[in-house]
Length: 451
Image (cartoon, rainbow, N blue to C red):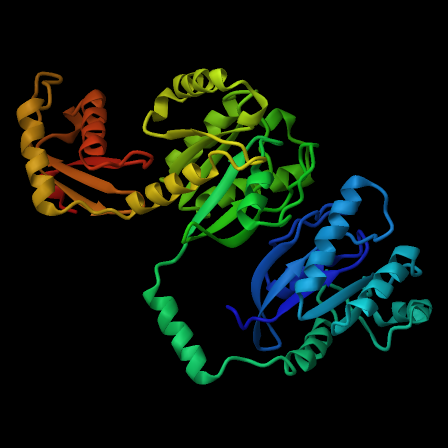
């Protein structure tokens, strides 16, 4: 991926940048809404443009002269995208005369000394293109009229981007072959999703791991809208970390933008290997935190609970907060609870070490000989109890999968195996083979049914 050119899409608020981003990448990754300011962080995805593999970057509305703290943060995000881009796509609203923020954005791009393709969006038909006369007063050499919503003239845009892409060198065939072999041999980095209620510190931890303001941080809840992901190296290990929008109770979620961001957060759980549930230690575990943890458990994800903001409470209260969290999460006692401060860095190393550990445990397969010895001792210590006048006979136990580790016990009458005994076997498996932090799946089947 090191040779993928970066294409950054910039422009003032509400000109259709996210719609164009979705059009170029071929799927609705960025939230699209009529209200300005929906995209606040940089949003990355890999795509193919003009036959070339690239990384597309969507940015928040750019207004370099704003004095609003949130707007200034968005402007920093957009400037960071411009700085790292190989090519910039500047989107203007072709249906309206150019504004002062448009002029400021064009002036900023001239100083950036990067290849820029200027696009006039919302041109749904040829009859509207006469409106573009005023836009040439901005001093742009060429302006491509497009409709990102309907796909009009996006082929012309790709052709213009292709002309610039041809000036960016690609890896040689030997280098590409070597990169492919290396990628095949290397285990894929763990994908780690930070989830939790708004303002729990997810973005602060995300930025600390990245070593920069990769995700916008603000003390107002709801700052992160789209999930933001980044490849980071920490203590010699690589992770793909994902910052997600804060998830509130359904009754508190606004229709539209926030609802979409919540859906994306929940989808991030599906894509993750490890889920870190971020909790404000001063507020403690709430019902919504328990629901998020339960959701991750149901989807078979490794889980770590991070009690953030320990720098704001007395040291003597930390253990009390851990005990209260463990009591609330009694349904998942196997989950590790780690106090930390994303602000100071305290506990972050312990958290990431645990993330790496539970990620490896997800891949662990118990040797057949060890599983057989465990199973024999299990039956000696605690055979399945009689239920409904019948005592099920368990013949053998086998592991059929990983991520999450999944086991099947073949027995004479699975319907007569009590739920308490099922939990007992899972707990013994976890203790015996060090599966803390990992959800285990255990199925009881009749022997004649096979795998």
